[in-house]
Length: 280
Image (cartoon, rainbow, N blue to C red; front, side, top):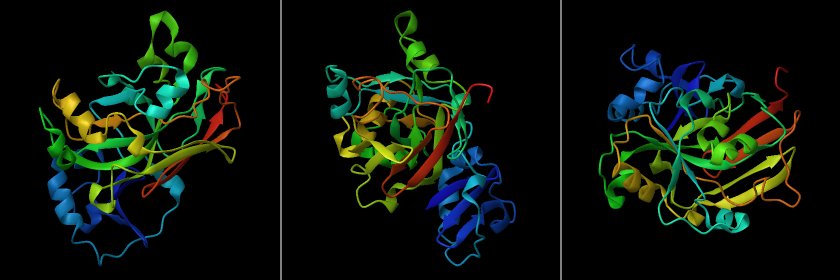
């Protein structure tokens, strides 16, 4: 199943277009998107019967974040072997965890206002919790996942490394967490632990990797995080980025106004964000 946020309404995406959940269910489900995760089993069960429903074509620009207002957002640093190597850092023994504040999240095609001259890109697989996870095992972790989506952990590197490290602030400017274009349930993938992902700037590919290079896989992250605190339905986990970020280049390269940042993950889709100057 593909779940989209179409003009603020929960929508199942098919090859023909979108099926509005609230309309199809006579108001029993939806229309608001975030509460769908609180009753994810019922949403999945109802959506399974929509195979023959009439779908309506839509413009991708109508899509918003498939998780518009999560209670918790987790993000993981240095979680690809290739990224740890390019930064010269030692691979961590536990997940390097921080947060992106929820109000920084944005839609898959929203413009991103740059906060300064050192703003970097980080394409990431994003996992969304569908069933409360509290002290779950790695073997059981996928059963707690609603689905996967594409994310960008856009980062103001100057603020990120200020005052001995301001990771959460440096990665939480307005719009610095675009996600989408929709959420895809794990059963849609032949192997959800091995997906190609990458991003480009103005058509030039700058990141190209696979999620099998993750140091801590999605199930391992859920097990590690849920050992510390409960993961709630609709919570978001940005799982880390592969090699190719701008700050690690020689010389360093950063995003500029007018750049078009495209990010994709195999089996999910592509998001596209235009960079604009502050106040532009």
